[in-house]
Amino acid sequence: MSKRQLAMVMDLNKCIGCQTCTVACKTQWTNRNGREYMYWNNVETFPGEGYPKNWQNLGGGFDEAGDLKDGTIPNLEGNYGVPWDFNHDEVAQSKPFSPEQDPKWGPNWDEDEGAGQFPQDNYFFYIPRICNHCDNPGCLSACPRDAIFKRDADGVVLVDLDRCQGYRYCIAGCPYKKIYFNPKISKSEKCILCFPRIEKGLPPACAQQCVGRIRLVGFLDDETSQVHQLVKKHKVALPLRSDFNTGANIYYIPPVLAPPKYDAHGKIIENSTRIPKEELETLFGEDVHRVIKTLKGELENRANNKESEILDMLIGFKHKEMFKLDSNYYAEEFGMKPVDARYFKGKNTLKFTSFKAVH
Ligand code: SF4
Ligand code: SF4
Image (tube, rainbow, N blue to C red; front, top):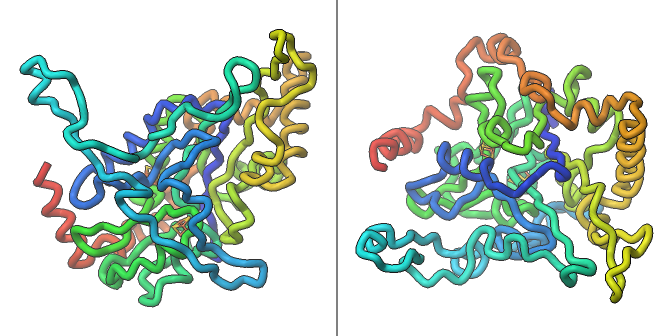
């Protein structure tokens, strides 16, 4: 555990699956140099296979006794999909726009497919996923080189690129499969929670750019922060797959409202819900039903012109009310030498600097 912990709350009721967060992260951190297939932020359709494909069943995390569980390293062809380009040059010669390769899988391959039968009971929703900056990271425990560390100041989990030798135990150990292997430099890389931005009091790029304004960011121990109030006070935000036992610090407001099911004659089935309760329990645990009940109560309050502190927070009227970050804290903690030396000052980082010139 770190001294303090940053956290993010994502409201799944507001995610429109536009992938703006994905692009914000990709253009900032992973659009080249061995990172082409990496999506530190991805938005997947649930139910679906996710990214990497079948990640929920690839092992890692901890068992009830606290022992690290075996995990599998996803492969490029089958689980991630080989990144491809499009034939932009040929389009100018009136050829149809198409991929240059013959892709078999990739991020969002099954986007919007969902489950059920249209129009009776089809359903899906979006789940944006980033590294959970876990209290007890499976990646960190699995690394035999001690190359992964959790910052005491804010709980951000980072890879020390000088220590990493590319063994990839971390990828097997992470049950969320949110750490990736960069074949160009033989190192593991992952979401850094945009710590250079955070240290300046700015929200992560994925949160700042979010069109649906679904993401709230702050310190869990800051009682004035929305993340504290939603996670600790009102207890309406839940971690994803808490049964992985890593102590995830990205929290979700589960989907609350959906259309009812229709019978064979097109009539509404009263009190029906399209998302099977077992599926919600798998993702968010049995507590999900209490949360949904609470949120429905809040919606009813609002419909009756009553106050709702929870809904006011979730609406996200202003950015400054959604992100409670503190550059002064970092200034005091790091003496305004923000960037973690173990991440940015090593010989491998120099390689990244030279990458920047190659577009
Ligand atoms: Fe490590 Fe995975 Fe947890 Fe991120 S989500 S801290 S990569 S175990
Ligand atoms: Fe990417 Fe930053 Fe969001 Fe992490 S916090 S997924 S690095 S944009």
